[in-house]
Length: 117
Image (cartoon, rainbow, N blue to C red):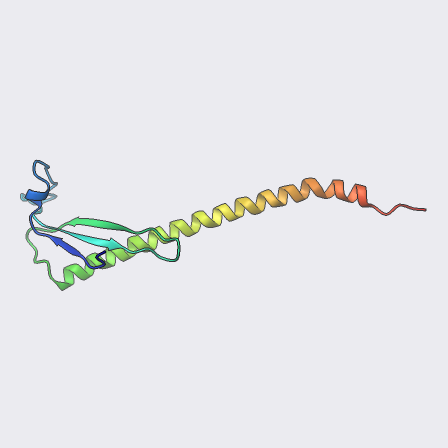
């Protein structure tokens, strides 16, 4: 398993027949880079980000570093979304427990109230 960015040097071969978007340029990307989206925590989700490279810019350490920052931000956003979802589930479970206590408590108090002799 690779944990480093992987450069794809010939997109026309890999994606034959696919019209890639050009953006503001007249030329579509001919290269791409695949970057890992690393999991955060024990239950984090892993994935990859595929980015078409600007055909008019050299893919150097600065470009790679920027794309790794983007991948890191995506990883953090996924971790935050997962943590929010887990917290929402916990809150729902606690609400259910509280509801059960509320339903059970009046019955329990009525049946267990001290009786006078």
